[in-house]
Image (cartoon, rainbow, N blue to C red; front, top):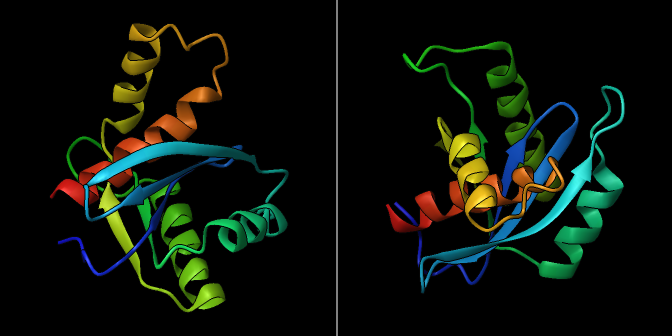
Length: 138
């Protein structure tokens, strides 16, 4: 359940090529896409993430955890969980995992409806906002 004592919460849609980032306010249970951070190789883009976190000063993080349709784990699930653990260790702030099944599908639909699909990578920050709003509203 969302903690409404948080002022701002930052959400992540974690991928091996891009990390979508969103920012949200628990008091109004709303989130908006913020940024897309490219991932190069196997190294997480900490300098770019550090800059966003310094700028926005979130009180907590939400990380989408991708599962198969039947709820089982897949390789990207472990990658997202490691990312969530690293966030907690690096910033010493609460990290809330959220089941992100279908968030990318919903983000693509939103892009099509709003004619934003010109850039495929735009889906990632919208998916992060969907994941974050799910956490904030539930």
